[in-house]
Length: 264
Image (cartoon, rainbow, N blue to C red):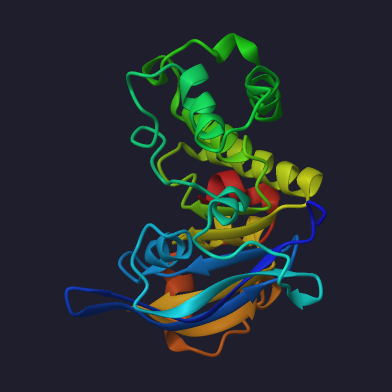
């Protein structure tokens, strides 16, 4: 299948921790090459959804399935398999905590290639660094020698090095300065267009999500409040009071990318 031909469908996802239901019957579908945002206040279960999708949180019920342009296909990898994990990669929130402090950038990028038995590591590492705008001069530096924005670019390069078709983005800019946020978001948007990637992005910042995502799901207390388009949100065509309150809390919220730096 081509790089732009894989999306994902989540049906009736439920996550339970020691009797506490963290996620209740969440369902959504992201078609190949599309971008989808999940928004809500802290503790609403946004990140848990992403973690359950890629196997980092236990699923008590529900299905996560890759889909092609025409829907589910038996030719697509089975969820939980090694090939499934290779097709779906995650970029975590904290660039300071997601990179091993005692490993060079070269080793950090080489590790997923070794795990999946992929050859041509030299070429892939150089290409991944070039794609995120850093270059080979960063290969043998350590994370503490990089800025926050540079670390997050390395985290993106690590996710891309396996040539996935779906990227899960867990608040990838929340710990960065506003100007650096805009740079990283523009990089992600460029990469999605170039590679035909499918994005699922979690954030509490409406301006950030609507900059990248055409469709949104609003969550509260582990449940879906409503689903709507970014255009509907920008025009304040929302059905639920919780979404309205979320918009009020998002200071300076705007749809236009030009205002992203000042709004974040």
